[in-house]
Image (tube, rainbow, N blue to C red):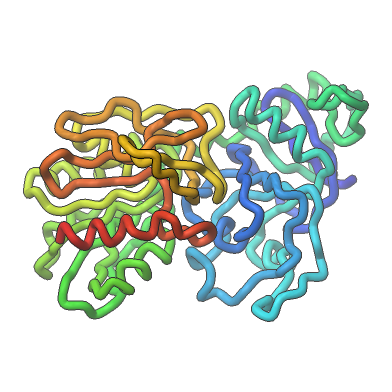
Length: 376
């Protein structure tokens, strides 16, 4: 019990460290997927967040080689699991999860009541937190608190003293105050594929499988930084994809301004995740922060006007509020009825809040890419 997760409301969860012994702070969120932790941990949309896995066993199939990741490094600020398996078994495994985390300098904590922690985040909403170690000298004057489930006295959840709580106020990092998109975006242009039809991918923190999904459809994909105007490319563009990414979409003001120029040119556009929010803002809509977000591979999305429901992969904490003029709702979430996509009534503009490229997760929404290709 040498490590603690401290929440900003004063709650402390004690446990065992199996990652890097490094202080970390960020927004504590949870994901409900059963598999796919290598892809999730390398998803740039998790930048600045401490990720709680609700599935009780993590690490059992190790970590594959880099070509299977969604970016070139671990993006989360830390992870929390219920049970960590240090002896993985899988033919693609190259190292254990713990070894990977230590190499990349990412802290990880094994606690026993991730269920209680998740219930807290669902009830009170995601909140800021930090992972600390004994060397920070914050191990004194701690009292027991009743479990979040209120069924038994839980030794893994504690409330800190007023001294500890006072100290913690100065060390909580709110990632949503930063322009996280600028932090994770590529700094230079590069090309994937050699098709005759060219599209630009605005990298706001793009998962690699987005570009690969476009490449598989015979497209040449030019990946550009988040602050680059695709209309300045010398190549003849047939369309633009706005990628997923982390944080508050309203912070991506330069990207929003460039998308407005694309809309004026009636350039075919596909937005994914953060791209859905950026398209909405550029067209005159609005966005807002969700209480605890959608993260995992089991989010049900209904095609508006039908009884067709897709099982989707998602990772976002913000959503579209006001749908812009000329657009209509394309999908909605079957759990909470929040917007999951917009599509223009006459022009080739469309976007989805979920991840049609999956990775990890189901492939129910893969056809979204085909719809985009038809508009090129």
